[in-house]
Image (cartoon, rainbow, N blue to C red; front, side):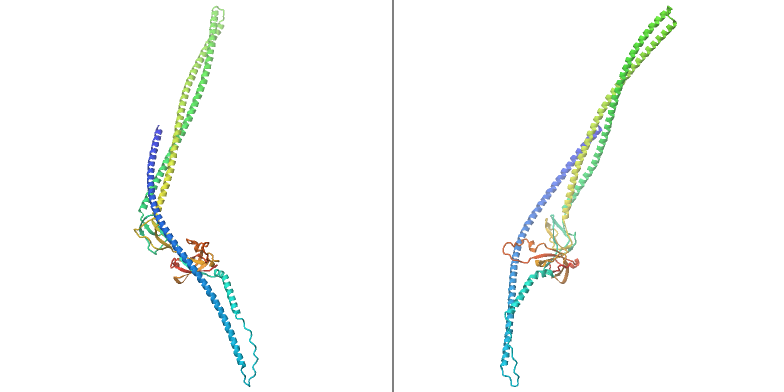
Length: 572
């Protein structure tokens, strides 16, 4: 009875605890819904801000597209002008060649004319009369035939044409084998515009424009009281969930103890059932023995009755024979010895009768005892069966109790799963709160220099607002080489850099990588040579060059500086 009362109390306590847990769960869900609604409102505000930013970005993109179209048009015009300039240069070179050829022809004609004039003068001198004493002049041979005037210019033009053809044929090979140089190169560095991800008011700016910063250094701090409160609230919720989980562990241990106790009691009651079954079997065996004893006693009574009757008949016969012999002795017809013998027979018959009667009485007493034993055995059997039924009822009751305790244990397992899920959700909420709190502080992603600080203390910023720009402290060079110069350039080739802003200073470097496409392919509107008129223009391929100097030496470089880059192909 006490165990049933304890079981009812435990059930009532479990029901009350379940009600309390349900109430606390509903409160937590209500808080979660409120938090979710706040997050949704913040998300809507953020979406509105992003939508405005997107519209601004689209407008800026449209403006950039228009500017790019204007720039492309200007580039095309400059290319056309460059082509016209190259055509004019070719025409000038041709005109110069023709002028040189004409000058050569004129020079040849002049020389031939001078030779003719000299021959004429010589012939005139020869025609004058010689003095009398002078010897006769030697005979003058006729002048040799002169070279045709058109042959020398033709030879010169042929040699010049051959040289031009050979140079044009081998120019690309020579250009890619020798030192590759270009002034279309600039200093570059990673520029990271840092933005906020949460809405807040700027509390403090820890740096100024152009300050050097280290990775992880705090740059801008936003007011984060609400985020700290959210973190504290999430930590309290996690602590509450952990406390519930710890209480659940103790409850499970207590319930396990109850299950073990119920199983122990159940095993003991099963042992009682076995004992009751043994008692029933013993009682049934006693009944069988008593029944067998009764049967044996009844057989002994029947035998005793028969013996008594036989002894009574023998006694009657002995009495009659004694009476007859005594009568005969009185008449002196019998001897005294015979009478004594008859008397002895009569006494023995009487004693035998008494013995038979005593045996009969003993058998009757034995029968009564066996009947009593039978009655007692039947009573014991009824008592044993009653105890057996009670033990079986107790076993069933204990089995039911064990089942109930196990069900309670399974319910606790289900509650523990819910608590663990709730704890995981609260830990996730805590992590989200901590992330939002961390977002209220803008840190430097790497070593570098601060560009322009775009916010001031007290300024309200929204998600996505650019607050500061970090320029990496590791510059590199981006050189745009003509496609005809890169036939033998590979990663690792050495390079030499001169900076326009630092005359006389040379920097060593090496090729990191060659771009997978020309610069035109990376533009917002890459050219489509399949449409319109096609003009072949030598494209430029960007080459990234890393500087081998230390940071102190590179500190004088600024992204955007113009440089001249020279690569030595095959020199590593």
